[in-house]
Length: 195
Image 1 (cartoon, one colour):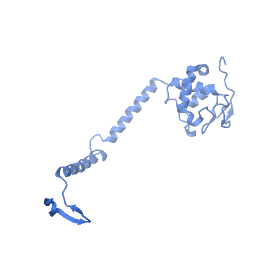
Image 2 (cartoon, rainbow, N blue to C red):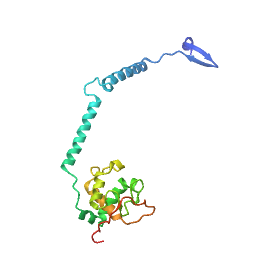
Image 3 (cartoon, one colour):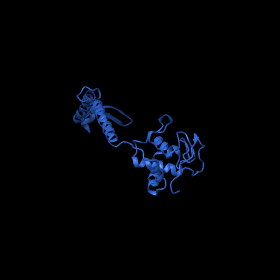
Image 4 (cartoon, rainbow, N blue to C red):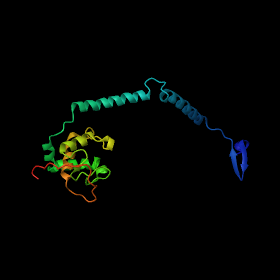
């Protein structure tokens, strides 16, 4: 303890404060990290280095967009026939797939039972943009962005999109509780074959 006696700066209430320097290895790490951060900032963040991060990000984004566009060019969205959509409205496997997609993508706006929340009621016979299965398919595929409905045509698989439309057609006339008031024009729904 005697070797530290000359380094005591002051003592207060029995507590001694010593003037001991930081170890050299810790100071080397501190100054090294400061120098590294300045070099990193200059090279990457301020784009002084070749191949800045922003350019790499833009190039990666362009490659991803080109890849997605190439896929959709090779696999265009071809609407199924109205007969196929109506036939799907009575197929349990199609309805299960459509109900699953509806729950994941549509229920937040149209309600769990398609009764309408912030989106319109899909169970009545009134439609804002046309209620034939062809028009419903186009509405789901292209969306109505100005009204808050995203286009789902490129976001979901074509078979899920068709199943979703078949499911929507199958719930028409189900009259769920607390349904939103009818909106749009009355459209007589096409009959589901065999129903």
